[in-house]
Length: 466
Image (cartoon, rainbow, N blue to C red; front, side, top):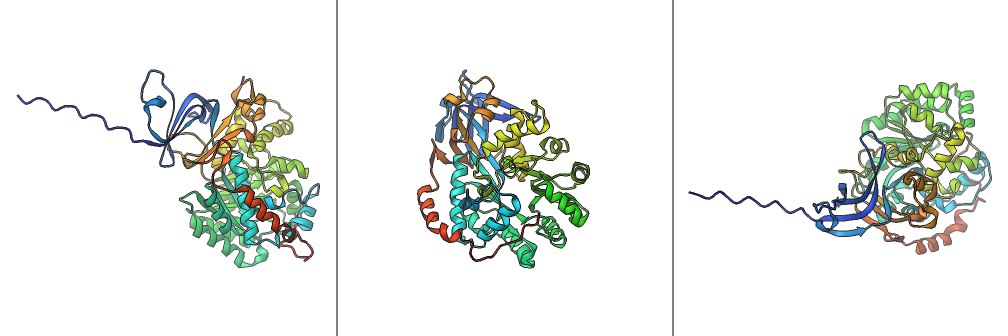
């Protein structure tokens, strides 16, 4: 009698690229609710999260000792979060941080920013973007959506830094057809760069600087090429009133008439929405429309804030942003999360809105949806890209912890981010930047600042009329 064949031994689990153990992990439940997993084990393979589980003291393969990885981070005492997303910024503008303060928007643009931007070179753009990326990595930002000039240079810096980016070459109708063509050319050439970490979009500046013909053409190009459109609109109430006076339509209605609400659209700011006219337009939209909110800048300019509650009820995702450091002075998305929670309570005169858990939802899942990456990032879950930050809550300002969500939103700070990871690659470990040289960047940028900020030439890249 032939003996039965011996059972085939199970194939060994291949080594992981990265193993993070003994942290608390912020995950999302089936209905999008925030769920904290204690004593979590996060396994990363090929830049993707393979699993997020609770360590099993019974000794199964989920215990840290049973797993093999090329790199292991013992993250005890920290909380693992999806990397933060800066949904709207202008990274090179860190070079202008603090230069034009305590001004209304028209003076800020016309007398300072747009004359200085006439001096931009690829070198100053690159140095500003490099400094910005360093700041964002240290603040736990793993993805940023940038809307600016010389975006090939910014794309190169994003690749160098290791960050994920959604990039658009800004244009005005005053540039003629070349502006829109350059925006499309950049979007088609550079999408998928940096091993897929760079995605691209079309970036018309705003309805008051881009005419109806260009807006409609942009909508057509977005449909043809499957591109996101990133635009400023309804930035403040004055813009909406001016648009009604000149065109009989709000900025959002201008976008609707151009067909932009029927493509994937990211609207920066929207603090000047007219609820009676704009909410019906947004509800009619056939595209994936989202809003990026940067509350610190609105406080500085004395604007209203983004109506997050109203937009949420209309089904419009609201992601968190900083805008550029020239107006906001910082690229701290953690602060944007805290301010969103606080300012919304004040704006709604309701202490029950916006809760800490809702703020965390906007900072993670909704921000990912806003920039068109909702299936790739924004959640610690199997199959998502391994964009992870580890936040240290051992400091006196975060202890004791009674409500972890409240501690993260209202007590923790961006400086508590210890480790930043993108696509499974560690970009900052224990507060040490591993991909960028800040000291050398600051030195080089300092040499160029006198020429950059010179306004004596009398030129402007555009005229602000709001």
